[in-house]
Image (cartoon, rainbow, N blue to C red; front, side):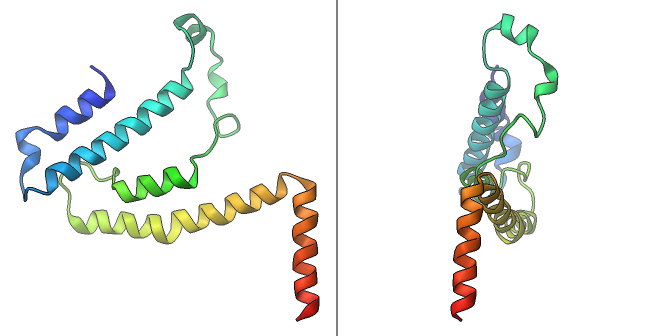
Length: 138
């Protein structure tokens, strides 16, 4: 049984289909997106053969060695509402989406941009020069 099989089978159980006819496709879409994201992360984490897996250094699984999710991944996660298990209240999904759109995405965009600027000295010098010129001309 794969992760996607388990997510799909639990999402299509008779107990989870209470409600209108639009809820089941949403649940299936959420489960599919969540399963794809989990599968991709697991495959990236444990890439290679079983021999490679047995000798893999476990300390490599950290923020210093794993890249953060892209803004596109964060946006898809926010749109999907995958953090809401099954048939929860609409207000819970709305609260999560409000957090995603209002806090997570803007904060990540700003901090990713700052990190991008600081990764290369030439980018930082150019940004400082542009800000300085704009500030002096106004």
